[in-house]
Length: 288
Image 1 (cartoon, one colour):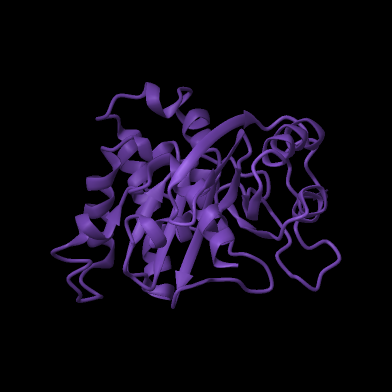
Image 2 (tube, rainbow, N blue to C red; image 1 turned 45 degrees about the vertical axis):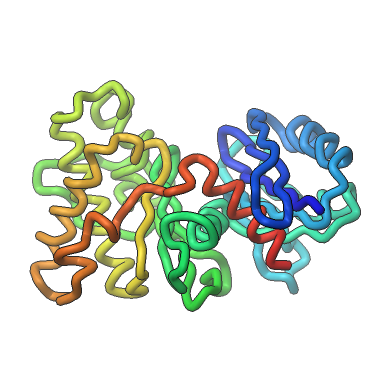
C-alpha cells in the first residue's frame, strides 16, 4: 500500500511515495513552471503508482475551507500563472483517489511532529525562511486553522536600530517577511545570503528579526518545539544568534527551562531536513 505526497513550492515541486510505515520510497522534483506543465508531469507519475491517498502541501495563499467553492485552490498568489488555480480537486479527478490539501508549512510541521524534531510532542511551530516566510502550527495534535491558514510571515516586527531598509514585501514593505526573507537579504546587502561571510552584520540583524517574531509566536501559542527551515536557515551560524537574542528580548519574562537552560534544544533545524514538506504531505495522506 502506497501513499503519495506533494510539496508544492514556488520554485520547485517535490513529490513521491511512501509505504504504510512512512518509509519514503521515491522522491522526485520538478520546476514550478505553469500548472499545465508541472501538474501533467506529476499526474503521469502517480498514475503509475497505485496510491491509496494523496497529501498535498502547497505554497499559497490557498483556500482550505471545505465549504468554499474554491476549496483546494491556490488563490491570490503573486506568482505568474498560478493565481486562482484548482489544485486539490484537479488531482482528485485525474487520479481518482482522496486528496488531502493544506499549506506547505503546515504539512512540514506535521512531518516534523510525526517523524522529526517534534516527535512525541503534541505541539510545535514550523517556520520556513527563504524566498518568503511562512509558518505552520500544530496545537493539541491538530493543524491550526482559522477562517484561513496562518500568515506568520506578515506580522509586524520592530525595526532594528541599525537597519533603515524599507522592506521587500509588495504588500506591507517592512513586515517580518519584508525584512528577513531571502530576497530582503539580497536586496538590502546586494548579495545573496550564502555569499555573505558568517560574521557579517547581516546575521545579527537577521537574528533580531527572527527572534522578535518567535517571541510573538511563543507568547501566543507556547509551542513545545520550534523548528526553523528554509534556505536562509541553512546559514547555521544563525541558530546561536537567535537563541541569544530570544533570551535577551524575553528579558526573563517567561521562566521555563525551554527558554532558559534548553533553548538550543528548543529552537532547532528540521530533523527531516529538506524532506520535512514531502514527509508531512505523506503524513497528511496517511491520517485521512
